[in-house]
Length: 306
Image (cartoon, rainbow, N blue to C red; front, top):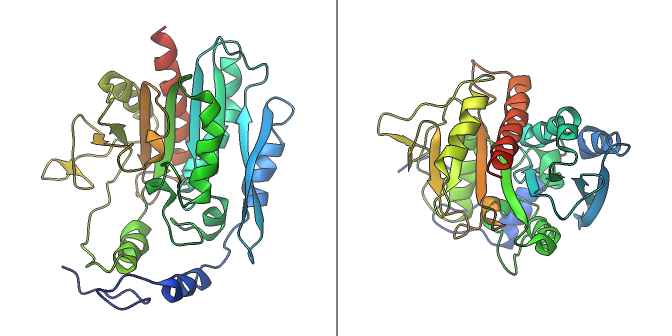
C-alpha cells in the first residue's frame, strides 16, 4: 500500500462530479492537435482519402474533428489493415508513428491491401498530454456496446461496416514515466483505491490478445522493431507490468473482456504496441520509427499468410 496522496479527492472515496470537474480544470492545453496532427493529415490528402468519422464537442475547450485516412481506390476484394493511435492522447509516438507510417510506407501497399489508419482517437487528451477523456474516463477500457466514452463509440461506429473484413489490427501505445508519477495515482484516487507502485518496462513490447495470440505474428513484429530499438526485458518475476511474459517482449490480455481497442474487431491478427520514450537508450524519433516499423511488419506478416 502506498501513502502517496493524490491532490484531488478524499482517500478511500471514489470521485464524484465535483472531483472530476476539479480534475478537468487542472488539465491545461499543452500542444496543438490542429498543428501537430490535422496539418499532417491535410498534407496527405493528395495521396490518400481522408474521412471525418465524427467530432467531439469538448466545450468549453472546443470541437475536435475525428479523422481517418483510407487507401485511395479501396477494393473490397483486398484484405483490410487497421492502424489506430492516440487512444491515450499522451502517448505521442502512437499518433506520430501512425502518421509516419502513412507518409513513408503506406504507398507500398497500393493494390495489395486496404489501409485504414486512425492516427489520433483522443484529440482532447492529445492536447493535454493525458490518458483520460474530459470526463476522466479511459477510452481504452470502453470499447464496448453503449460505450460512455464518445472517442471509443465513434471509432466503433466507424469500424462497424467493416465487421468480418478486417484482417489485421495494430493499436499503437507507449509507456512513460508519467504512468507512475501521474496516471496510476490518479486512477487509484478516482476509484477510491490505494495506489500500488509499479514498474516501467524499459523498451518495446507487445500485448497480444489472449483469445487469438498468434505468437508468430507477435515475434515477426518484435524481430523487425529490434532493428530500431531495444525489446523490453521481463522483470525478475517473469512479468511485464504485472503480466506473465509468454515470449520475449510479449504479454497477453483478454482484450475484448477488458474493453481494449485491440478487441474492437474480429481480426485474426491483433496486437498492441508499447514503447518507452523516457528510456536513456531511445529517442522520441526512434520511438516513432519503431511504431511505423511495427505497422509495416504487421501488415507484411498478414499479407504473407495469403
